[in-house]
Amino acid sequence: MTVLETLATEQGEFTLGLARNEHADIMLSMLIETAEVMEQQGLKQWKPSIFSIELMQQYLAERKVFLLMAEHEAVGMFTLQAGDPAYWGERDDASFGYLHRLTVRPKYRGLNLGTKMLYFAESYLRGEGMTGFRLDCVSHLPSLNAFYTRQGFEFVAEQDMGGRFVNLYQKVFSA
Image 1 (tube, rainbow, N blue to C red):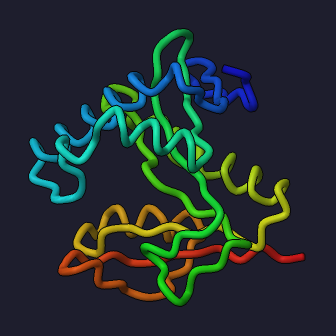
Image 2: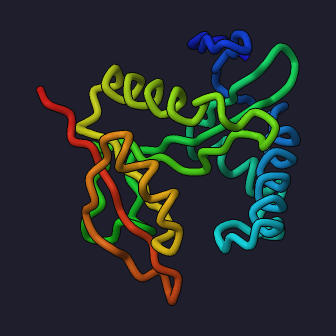
């Protein structure tokens, strides 16, 4: 993995870089672990069964996948893609970068790593010449929605994904 950024915390340094095909198993285990913790906490967001090695390979083929590492351990990840018609429908705009699967392993939470990854993603998208930064968030988790608004994302709309409602958020970059 080529290191794109070093994130410093009081607990040490973390490196952020682009995932490659050989990281698919690491991505899968991290997302399943996060989904299992969500289920244990009674959060209806991700289910472990939605993740598979084939889905990780699809992510790697269709998106940019970023891994956050602490030495040789995967700590967090997120994906970025240009355009997201599945969630944004007629509002979709390929000049925006779209965030998915932002996660930090449970034992590394509380270090502001999610926030630091979002700041990196925003800077990365600006450097790529994107118009702005978008994401979706399940509407029934107020604390998660509040996290994104604290990061400067503005509410755009609620979207019905076939009975599962998500809030759409964005930041438009100034010229």
